[in-house]
Image (tube, rainbow, N blue to C red; front, side, top):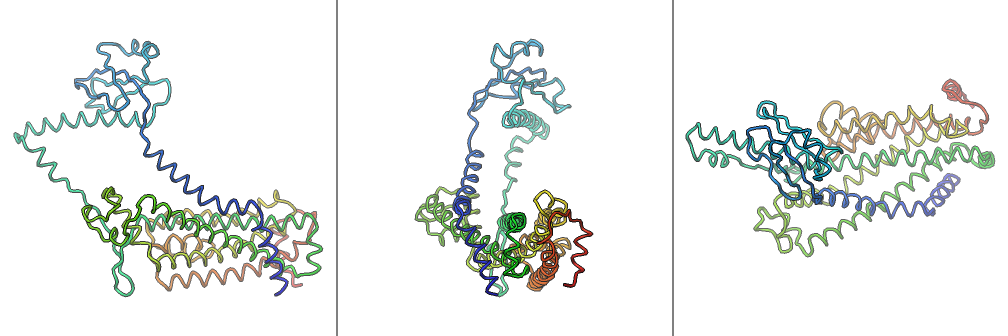
Length: 446
């Protein structure tokens, strides 16, 4: 046992002391926050490019598009399309909009340009023409109905409704919930586990290959058993991944606290959560609109301490159990080959269940109670990812315990199988290994 602890300590310290580990640990939360902030800024940024579009209107519509913001429409009267095309460069037209005579029947206008038009221009032109036609049709219907106030009455029937989700706790307590947050949280955790299993599992495999190719392994094996060496590597790298994740949680919490302090300085969060209308908002949050208020209340109501503790606890377990399961297989692959090139034939059966689990997770988010969700979260090869998608929606305790039990049992079995491959393959050099050869190693009784 002491030898395993020494190997764990070596694997752990040799990795956490690297500059790459420190940079990745401290910069990743900042980088992710920066990427999301940049994406939000880009989505909110208005298109300020000035453009002029020539319009050939062959229909009976009167001014179906009007200049607005930074886009100007220039009606060309009786100008033919060929003439307008020839004048595009001289007049500096960004594009030519052709509205055909049968626009009401064809419902299709054409936008010509020498380069691909932006989505804003395309959607803006389409929405203007559509709104113009709908206005004409609506006016005709109102006139035929002989009800001048029909439009106001129809507008009065439009009633926006928002649905607030509430969960009953086991003790009957009512708690606010958010389907969107549960879905986003499940996807985020499952993807992190997928990334960690691959990233740190491959580190174990590469470490084994490196020691084997440098013949260092022959010296190490003289002092420790192959099983001790394999377990020391697996557990040591697992502690590195867990350390990095915990650091990310702490740094993310600090960034969130700073962001809330900047966006909502000095706001009483309890009052914000209990506010039912904008008039009840506490001082400092008066600038929130209804959608922002709902989002803030969903976040505050969903992420209580018990919820966060349960989610983090489940994440840590399934991360460790899933990593230990797959890293044993990665270690076995590393011991069976002489270089990374030869690993490709053995990597597919290992990586396929992980990739499949991601796709199952997408379907599970739509139906977390279905049979696909159940079996995907129970089968050990997919459960570390699929179960993390289900947990934010609520999973029966017996299903959670069954999934955990099967995952632990599978890890023990796979470790036993991997150890048989490891102890034979670790000293095997210069021979191209096949599945048939590995099957022989598994049947050795030494």
